[in-house]
Image 1 (tube, rainbow, N blue to C red):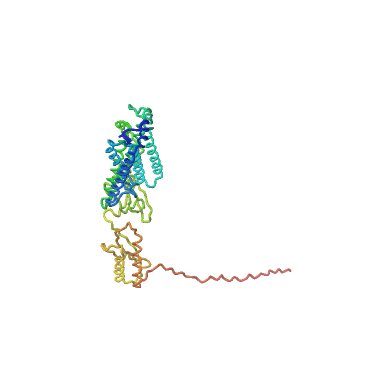
Image 2: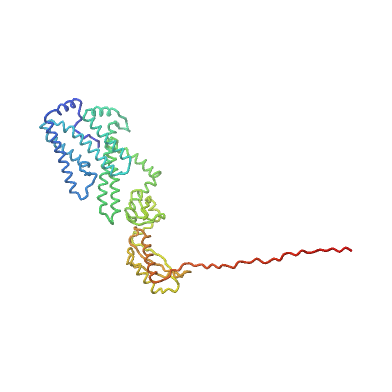
Length: 445
């Protein structure tokens, strides 16, 4: 596959450029301008009608104002080519000879800008690529119209070098690069469109559709790469050596990367983990929001996201709260004072918990005497919820508030630890009598 410029059947030479300028001064140019304006108006009308029939029109193809999408320059180019074929026997067509290259460049620019912008919406490098493609496309159009392009292509054909047993020219390399870019853009656009169709309205089979979309995207990109290499003139049989080297690289340096990719397809195929499941991995609990070929994204109820390599989900223990049943059992503990009539309090507490919005009626909540604590009777309240991804703290808080209101209404005391402090009387130091001096007398005889 090689990029052949669709601007015209052959490049405009220097002699033809002078003839083209002469033809632009003929009165028949006005008829050409009217025909071209009719093609543009009809293209706008067709795209507008097609957009109106779509339930959810895609901004990439239709744009916001019809003329800023991909379809408008493509449809206008097709109509212009048809009009040129119909009028080429009647009059010279200098206007169409200029308009067709312009419409072709506009179609290439729109295709590149829209697809890359949708695939990488927040990438700064994409903006640079868009501007580069725009400048190159318009420069190629000017060179083609002015007749410089044939001379430039001949010079590029003279620059050659050998790759193995074949010979490759600089022109083939440039055409192959453009082919690779075009094929990759078309592959991304086609895979994105197919993925959106596959994932639209998916519920229980979302993981299988995601796996099919990933496999299809990989196949399209590999096919596009093979076509681009063939366009350059590289013999694809020479890739067998490269494939062997790649296998050694995967076995050595890329082992972890390959393991993550394989693990991603295994997870999607086994459906042990699905998008929307509530899981706990390495003390991080969250809902699976996306399963990519290399990693899985978990989002906790606090808004934090964790990117987990797929190999971890295969080789380590993962707690899945939504695999077989999305219902989750939660418990909370409350104490009541000794001497409380539990035959009255426990049914009242059970009724209060059943009235909480997120608590399931089946299985019904239960209130159990779990322990004789030091300060009171310990009651464990167990209840089930069906939406753990909405957060467990809110459900437990609502149940605790219902229990507190019920205990206050029944006049039941909630005991709390009490400490008795005994204050001793101050100690009086013993009275010490003052020392009496001893008189020592001496007798002298």
